Structure formats: C-alpha cells, structure tokens
Image 1 (tube, rainbow, N blue to C red):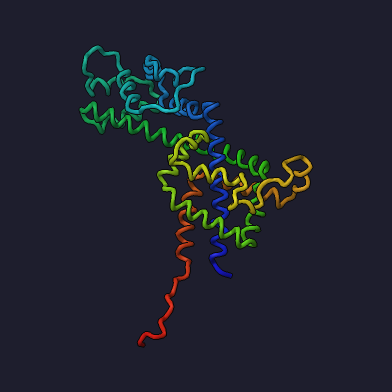
Image 2 (tube, rainbow, N blue to C red; image 1 turned 135 degrees about the horizontal axis):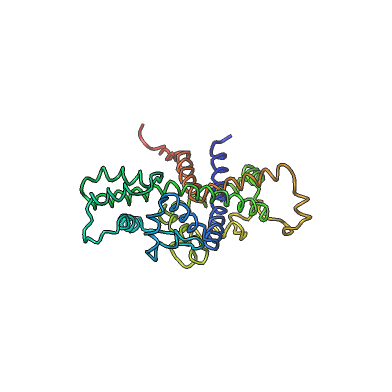
Length: 316
C-alpha cells in the first residue's frame, strides 16, 4: 500500500479536527467571558501569591487593584505586573519621604508576617538588587509575571477539561465519529485527495501569525469582520455547511438528531469514536494547525519526482 494513502488519511482527519477545534475554542471563549473565568482565576492566583494582609490592605487603596483582593468583587482578566510591583513596594511603608531607599524597603519587608511566602520572596529579591530600587522593582515585576504564568497552568487545565466536555457534546450533536471518518477517508480516494489538497492550500495561505490572531478573537462575528481571517472562517464553516470538499465525509445525522436516531446509532464503537473526537479537539486548534503543517511537509516529501521524457533523437 502506498504510504501517501495513510498520510492523506491523517491529513484529512487533522483538517476535520482543526475545524471542530476552532468551533470549540469559540464556545469556550464565550463561556469564559460570560462567567469571567479568567478574571476569577487571576484573582485567586494573586491572593495565593500575595498572602500578607498588610500588603493586601495597601493594594486595596488602589481602585484598579482593589477588586482583585476584595471579597465579592471581580477584577479584569489582565494586570500590569510592573504597576502591581510599584504599588506593592510603595505600600510596604508609610514613610513620607519623597524617595524610599532599599534600606527602608528591606526593613519594611522584615516587619511583614513571619509565615508569609511573599516576605521570603521579597527578601530574596532584595539581596540581588543591592541599593538599586528600580532594579528591585523590576525583579519583583518579573517574579510576579513568571509566578502568575505558572499558576495560570490551572486555568489551562480547566480550559482543556471544558474543551473536552464541549467537544463530546459537539461530537454527539453533529455525529463527529472519528472511527467512521477514518474508515471513509481510507476507502474513498476522491474524498481523501480532495481534503488533503484543501489542507495543503489552507497551510499555504494562512501563516502561523495569522492563525494565532484569528484564534485569539475567538468570536465568530469578529472573525468574519476581519478579512485576514477569511480562510480560517471558511474552514470553520465548511465542516458543517456541506461544502463540496467535506460533503462526502460521514458527518451529521441523515434525518436530523433525535432520540430514536441516537439509540439506533448507539454502540461501543460509536461512543469510542465520539470520545476520540472529544479528546482530539481538547488539544486545541493551535495543536492541529501545527500538526497539519508538518503533515503537509511530509506529504510534499513523498511526491514522486517528475522525470522528463527522453528525446529519442538525442545523442547518447
């Protein structure tokens, strides 16, 4: 069997996963915005990071920072770590002097609660700053930023769980069965070649930067308004619109989704196919976009070289 057949099957499946993943990303983003998941997670992370009541009390004096540390309030989904570092250091002492030197800052840090984690981190950072307050502020800003990034992994894991749940519901509602899709792509040469060509054209016309930008909007209306996202929007819509390239792929319910059709199709293999789809889309659209690029490069490498016909009149 020609190796290109297997590569084309994987490419076709990747294109399907990519399109479905874009849908899941959009739905996930809507849920995150409605429930303010990012802002809530950022607030929890900041309270884990800044665990000293004295510092928290000083930060709540700033209207922009107060919602993050006040019960019952929700801040924004973004915070400027440099501003936070400046406010944090400025609130360490109530000194009225115009310039607060490192000696006074170190003394103020030493007066914080003995059991607070932030006290230990600030004290360690102060030792590397010598007498340079600006350097110390920058170090605190970098520490806050890197710490929030690490703590943000919780949000990513939760987002992936949400993506799996949304993907599983979509797989059932739209009958996105990985098992039947793979079987059809393997058996149907025409569909396999069409979707492989579609994937190749998509990769050639959409750069990584463009795809990242279009995915960042995560709202269908915004994607449609931006001309640069035309190809991404077309891919998203083509999967379920019956577009010629995807028309023969066994997606959807022939007579519409209903309890009777669900019961008729229900089997161990079908559930496995839906679960595989849900697991796949939970990896995210960026994963499938990067994989598609690699597969297209492999596919191009498998093309047989075109040998020019030999001229019979040529002298040997």
